[in-house]
Image (cartoon, rainbow, N blue to C red; front, side, top):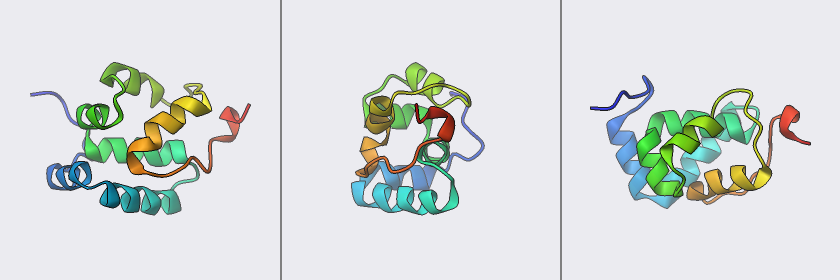
Length: 99
C-alpha cells in the first residue's frame, strides 16, 4: 500500500470525491483558515489523498506532487486547473507567485 499523508482521512476523502458540492464547501472553509488558495489546496490534497486528487483533477500524481512543493513557481493557469475539482475560482495566490 502506498504511503499516505498523516492528514489523510479515508471517510472524508471518500465523501469529498463523491460530491462536488461538498468539495466546494470544504475548500471554501479551508480558504478561511489559510492565507492563499495554494496553501488551502495543499491542505485539501493531504486530506483527499494525492492519488485520489490526481484522478479528480486529471493531473498526473507526480506532477501534482511537484506543483504542491513549497517554493515551487506555478502559472496561474496551472493553479486554476488544480483548483477546478472544487468548483471555485482562484481568488488569492502567494505574493511570491503574483508575477
